[in-house]
Amino acid sequence: MDLLEQLSLGTILADGAMGTMLHARGVGFDKCFDELNLTNPAAVADIHREYIEAGAQLIITNTFGANRYKLKKHGFEDDVTEINRAGVELAKRAVAASFKNIFVAGDVGPLGVRIAPYGRVKPEEARAAFAEQVKALADAGADLIVIETMSDLYEIQEAIKASKQTCDLPVVASVTFTRDDRTLLGDEPMKVARTLRDAGADVIGVNCSGGPSQLLRILKQMKHAVLDGKFWVKPNAGWPEQVGGRIMYPADPEYFGDYALAFREAGASIVGGCCGTTPLHITAMKKAFETAPVFVAESISILAEDEMLDEPAEQPTQLAQKLSAGKFSICVEMDPPRGLSTHKLLAGASLLYDAGADVINVADSPMARMRMSAWAVCDLVQRKIGVETTLHFPTRGRNLLRVQGDLLAAHALGIRNVFVVMGDPTSIGDYPEATDNYDLVPSGLIKLIKQGFNTGVDHSGTSIGQPTNFFVGAALNLCPQDMDNEVKNLHRKIKAGADFFLTQPIYRVDDGPKLIEAYEAKHGKLDKPILAGILPLVSGKHANFLHHEVPGVFIPDEARERIESAGEGGAKVGVELAVELIQNIKSWASGIYIMPQFHRYDMVAEIIEAVK
Image (cartoon, rainbow, N blue to C red):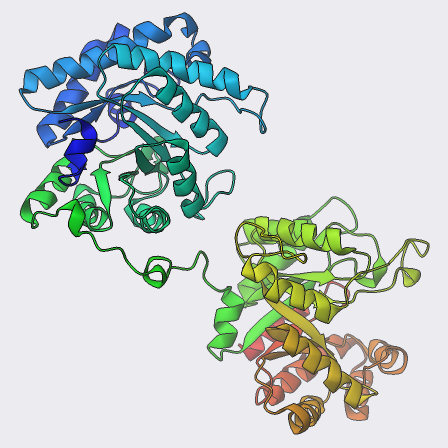
């Protein structure tokens, strides 16, 4: 039987990693593994024999990088045909010695260069390089061609074309995915499966990537996209880790044995292992197949779409989860630096995180003053401190193009919490002559994010490839001069999709209940979490300035008198006042949003520790 006839009878078992096994024999990763077909054929043949003895019904030649571009890096570009022919001959001799019917797959990997439109290598040049390798493999007697570990759909389509034009062997086309279940260029599994089918692949594959769990999820999506397709699955033994200078893979053989059955039941025609797997993994998979009931391909039942796609690409943010669980949350605002140095900012963020802050909020050009990009600061804080951030996202100064581009950039950096706000007018800042035009008001931007980006489309309704996962906050004034207008704005933001609200600073316990009662009298229960703004007072002068000169801030006489009478101990009293206020608002507030004054992060840390 040829391969496709065999697959009609049921799932077959492929081999595991070649590179992992060669490296275990002392071959460095800087060496040309493919050239060992000529200089150390015994090592390659031994690995083939081990996989055959483990139970593999299909083995792959040691030719993954045997194309003219990759071989050129080692000075072997003139040996393409010889290296590929030797690779097939070694595998076929190992099969002959076993007296078993085993398929030999000619292995074709990526060229190692970018092709147009993402590189300078023209499609026809890539196709010629693939054709050169495929011809050598087919002429040497390979039973099928395996094109594997591809991340660029343009490149793999050229490889499939080259194979179909050069020989009449069955073609397996296999793609690798990143941690977010997308290719390196952002293509999702269902699109990949359809593209490979349309390009003429006989078997659609997924290999390398993460461990078995991820590839089972991807296989289900691919199977859903191409219901009558045949599928190849070869996962890594988990995500690799560097331990003591060695690359280690966590998934053991027994774990692979369990997943072999899951792959088969999900519709895989060929199952094996990729990086980190060994003959022990293949033995475990064989044992699993032998001890489980025989499974015929025709009996596979396709899972319903909601069952197949029921695993979300991302979990809700930590802030979203905490607020949903009704846990009191603590957010702290920080301003980006005005220059290049981020040392003080990161030190402050570390202090706040250690004290118990749940989220660091990063303001964007506060008071319309030039500062470092808020996205960059969010990225730095999340990577270096390990605490989740909320990006302040003003609409002022951004047109529709920039708004949407900035949102995509933030999402690509791993930022998921955004606080939508109008922003300060440029007239009050460093550059009063700068334009501050905008296309969207905050409620419009909230709608764009929640009803557009989070569903996978932009403002025009065009697909952005995959939905974003933003958790969106909006501004709320708990002590407005016009209560009716504030209630109207609040309702508009809720209808647009706002997930939570951050308020301006308050100093009176009853500010929140007054606005909540006014809202509920008109629109029913307010079921969105409110994080009350807390701006710690530092001195009597500071308190008087805020009370008399900052619109919307009302500080009770008693509080101003206490801090004024404290003299040099004003900061201590400021902490006490903040802690007392926080304890008294917990009946209606879901959390607090602390705004440090004069970079007094020590005061904020003291407040957090007191209310935790």
